[in-house]
Image (cartoon, rainbow, N blue to C red):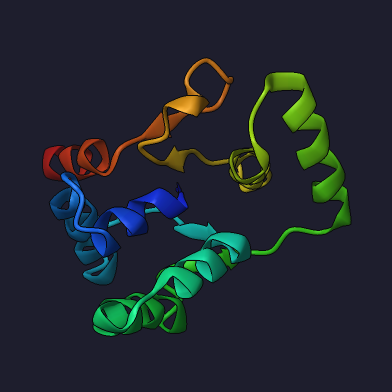
Length: 138
C-alpha cells in the first residue's frame, strides 16, 4: 500500500476521519499489515513541513515507523518524473496526485487515500477503514 499525504493530514488537522487514520497507523506499528507499506519522499516532506509545534509528538511517532522500516520511502527518479508529467496530461491529475499514482504503479500496489480525484483513473484505492476491515476479517 502507498499512503497518501491526506491520511496523515487528517490526523494533524483533527478532521472527521482522524480516528480511522490513527487506527491504521497503530495497525502498521503493531505489525498487523501483511504487505509492504510505502510513502513517497514528497509526502513525507509535506507532512514534516506542515507539522506545527502541537503535532511534534504525532510526527515523532510517525517518523519512528520509518526508522523501524514499517513504512518505506518510495524514491522516484527522473524517469518517474517524466511519467508524472505524462500522467498529469493524460488522465487529468494534479502534480501530487500524479506522483502518488506513478509511485503506486511503480510499487505494484494501491493508494490509501480519501482523495476522490483517483476515482475512475485505473488505479485501486482504499480508505483506512477498508484496510482495517480486511484485517478484522483475516
